[in-house]
Amino acid sequence: MHLFLIRFCLAVLLLCLPLSTPALSQQWQAAGAVSVADTEMSLDDAVEMVQRETGGRVLSADRVERDGRTWYRIRVLVAEGKVRVYRVDPATGRMR
Image (cartoon, rainbow, N blue to C red):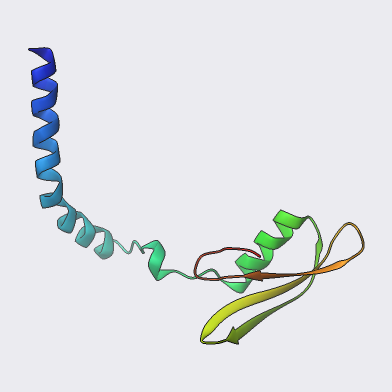
């Protein structure tokens, strides 16, 4: 009986979930919440991320547009005394 009650409650919850999703989405938008897809990493955020990941000294940071895509190019002086160039995709935050 206990297992039946748990399954029944779970089924009711799963059936009601799609009905509440659009209403919640509208409430979030009205409250000023922004989805991750609507945001883009700023150049300053990318610089902080690269500096934190590498531990090096940032020498320069530029916004580069190539083939219709935007990248941030960040030059860093790393511990070995070498200059490394990192690319950050502002849409995903992926660093190469």
